[in-house]
Amino acid sequence: MKISYLFIGIVLILSSCRKDDITPNEPFTPTKAQNVKELKVSAQFNWETSKNIQIDLKGFQSDFVSSAILNVKTEEGITVLNQNLKSNEDLQTTISVPSYAKKLIFSYGSLSKTVDIKPIVSLNLINKIYQGENE
Amino acid sequence: MKKVYILVLAALVQLGAKAQTVSVNAESGDRNIDAANCWAFGANSFTNTSGLVINGAWSIRSNQITNVLADASWIKSPWIKLNSGSITIKVRNDGSPGSTRAVRVRFIPYDANSLSSFKEGAFLGDSSTFNMPAPPATTLQNISFAVPVSIAGNNNPYKVMISFVGTGGTGRMISDDIVIPGTYWANPLNNCLPQSGVTDTDGDGVADVDDAYPTDVNRAYNNYYPSQNTFGSLMYEDLWPATGDYDFNDLVVDYRLQYVSNAANNVVELKAKFVTRAIGATFKNSFLFQFDDVAANKVISVTGTRNTSGFLSISANGTEAGQTNANIPVFDNAINSLGAAGAYSGFGINVDKTVAAFALDTINLTVTFINNGTPAPGGTISYANLSTKFNPYIAIDQTRGREVHLPNKVPSALASSSFFRTDQDDTNPAGNKYYKTVNNLPWVLNVNQSLPYPSKNFEISGAYTKFLDWAGSEGTLFPDWYLDLPSYRNNDKLY
Image (tube, rainbow over all chains, first blue to last red; front, side, top):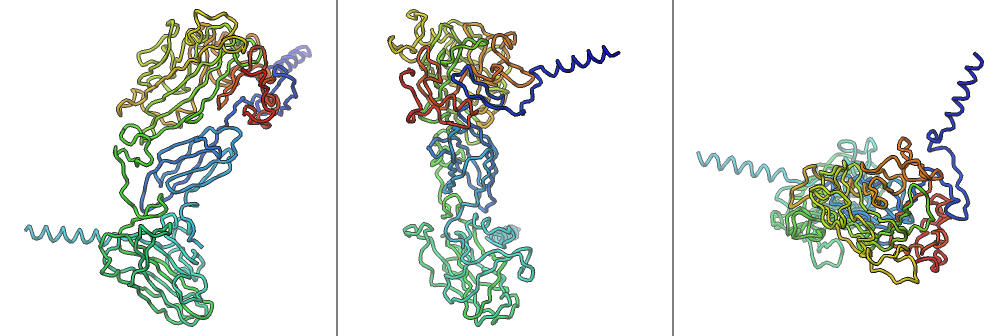
């Protein structure tokens, strides 16, 4: 019987060593390499020079519903999204921006707003719609 | 009998006219929401303080009224085409002391020549004032101001400015349920200026000013990747499943994608431009791209594919045959495509500065999803759903199943899994790991701008001095490693 337990124990230890079972979230320490072949990075790194950003934009209710092209661009002037949008519509979408980009500029009709890039950019159009007279 | 019909019709028309009002009652609870509808509030805010609210859950509360001037505390309407009738408003004092309090109404015409951004003209001579009971009386006043006959129904836009004026004390005024007879005529998307005739030549619902195709009802706007005037670079190592020398120049293809959408936000067509710049090896590689999870029958046609030897099998709609998802063949043989078949020495094309360069090869490809307004049998697809599914890859050296993709991009249905986990490949579909080594190194780089690639025999980390820092930090350091910044490049090692 002891032999059976020992056998089961060895099987469990061996199966725990299979690389398939490595969980993607386990801590990983990047290496300092002298060349590419020496590099060792985590499974989460996909070698992308762009990053995906989720846009969560709220429209607003108005007595006059109008359409315009929503334009989103980086500070560097690279347009990353054009989308026809009604003023009372919400928009949830994913855009790809260069990894080095820090800010996005949203333009919609006469509205314009600059926001910091985060994994999820939430934006409410009404915050910027009528300038100057609200005190 | 006819007279009865006419009377009924006239009554209905009148009823309809009466129903046209523009109002604000603060029930949004957020002044900005009403400002979004082009109402403006000068020293007036919203309150839900019990004892102050007139009607509902919210009312409008002025500042302390200490001024007889009408531009100190006010509410201004959007542009309205006024009808005959009365402007109504509920007002009361807040119970604090004061000498006099009054409500004044004035009318502002539109003036296109005004230097102000709001294009407000001079106040009309017609104005009305209602004197409130002396504070601290808080009796609710249902005030009514007639729209001047001179402007009612004259089809010009006006703003109505309601001012709260008075002298002495600290009393404020609470207002609610402002109702103005007329038609809302402001455009929140145009600085709240009056609505004007929007020119939409093709009638697709997108104004000409916004429409990249103002005379084409089937097209409205473009999205580009990486941008309208730049290219991205795809840089391949083609010894997969074995690793190579990491010069990432075995095949270098620049690309620009132009997605054309219609007013309904469906993609009409993709116009793609591919520029083959370098072949740093000897393999005859094919180049294709898949739209992951996009059925092949969502494509109507593909034009521009260069299938020089017929190696790739093409369906009637131009996608690759035998695939479930839409796979778009670009070229079947990079060497043929570059026009180098006869002259190719086998030692690489455009990777050695000491050897004469070949002219770059450009392929313009069009993938049609909607033709003259008619979508493909598989239905329409939006830009958001299509652009995120772009999955370019090569089939190595005329072996169709030997595909290599960007890291963690899925293979096509024609890829052979027999290559997985051979040599240095560590693909593990069960773990969603594709086209990476055990140390998670890739065979392909996708850079969002065109960049010089390493010359023959130079590893990329020698040519781009920040590459190892970027990769070693998993993208945290030097996310701009590929830009032409001081000390970022070793030009001697770049082609």
